[in-house]
Structures are given as structure tokens and as C-alpha cells.
Image (tube, rainbow, N blue to C red; front, side, top):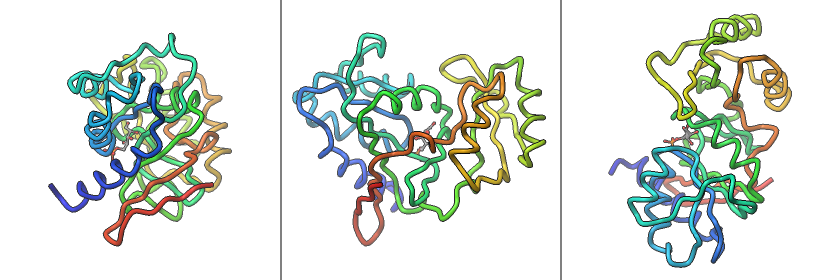
Length: 220
Ligand SMILES: O=C[C@H](O)[C@H](O)[C@H](O)COP(=O)(O)O
């Protein structure tokens, strides 16, 4: 395991304390969350099951014998655990490096508490070094790309990638993300955009950050 993987695993382990007995756990997507799923399996008898933000996480949860519920039948998600590609000190995030941003944002919106798990490399002074993923309806891809160019970004089509929802992804390089919530709201208004990978209007509530010196918790 690489040193970075060890940190991801430590953050994932620390997130277990937020899981409530008898509840349905919201589960995100990505390599950090994969460690969390493996940890969750050790206490699976204590939870009712999970809701999942991707086909990949669903498969891993089920392989561990954890029941995965259809979100439409679920009313209450006390805690959602997910990773991030970048976070700032206000716990506003860039997500979607793995293309799961839409289902992630839906579950994050429903959850009472959003706990983000990450290694220290994800904490940045300003969001935007990581290209901002945007899920688009395929027929709107070029139009949306032109809108992003007008705003100073450089869109790159994630060629060959299809989201779990049958859509496409544009990764926006060099986007000026000075006011994350304002930009998220503005981009949400462009037709053809399904989801912007900025989680600023609904940031995380808790950030578990693992570093070589230890694991620390940030809240807002
Ligand atoms: O679509 C993917 C998700 O937003 C992930 O949470 C994000 O890409 C972070 O993934 P990882 O834990 O692999 O760095």
C-alpha cells in the first residue's frame, strides 16, 4: 500500500465513529471510500444497510454482504461519507474525478451530516487546480463547453467516459473559482448541465483529514 493509501485508510477508519447504529448509511465513491466500505463491513451487523452513489460502490457494498437500498424508498440518511478531489478550509469541495458527482450530490443533499474523508493533499487554499468536472447531457456538450470558455475555463471532454446516468463529463481546466457558491449557482442555470462538481452550496459538515502527523477533524 502506498503512503497516500495508508492515509486514505486512516481517514476512512476514523469516519466509522459517525455511523449510527440501526441506520442507513450514505456511501460515496472513490478510492478513499473503498477503504471506508471495507471498514463498514466490519460493523455491518450494526447498520440497516446503505444507499450508494455509484454502481461501483454498490458492487463493493454488496460483495461485503451490505444491503443497498433504492434511494426512492429511503426517507432519512443521518450520515453521508464521501471523499473529494479538493477541499478548501470552508469544506467546500471539488468532486467528480471518478464521474460520480450527480448521485453524490443527490445523497449529500438528503443527508443530515456530510462527512468528507481525505488525505492531506486534498486540502488547498483555493479550489480549482483540480479540473472542475461537469456532467452534461450529451447533445448539449459543445454548447456547455462554449459557455465555460466564455467564463475563462478550458473544457476538456472526458472522451469515452459515460456516467452511471448515461451522460458525459467535461473537465474544466484553469477555472477561476474565487467565489465557489456563486459560481456553482451560476453554472447550475446553464441548460444541459446536469451537475457541477462544486459542492459549495452544500459543503461538507465535517472533514476528516489524514496526514503523516495524524488524523485531524475540521468542522464549519
Ligand atoms: O466521482 C468521484 C468522487 O467525487 C470521489 O469522491 C473523488 O473523485 C475522490 O476520489 P478519491 O478518494 O479516489 O481521491
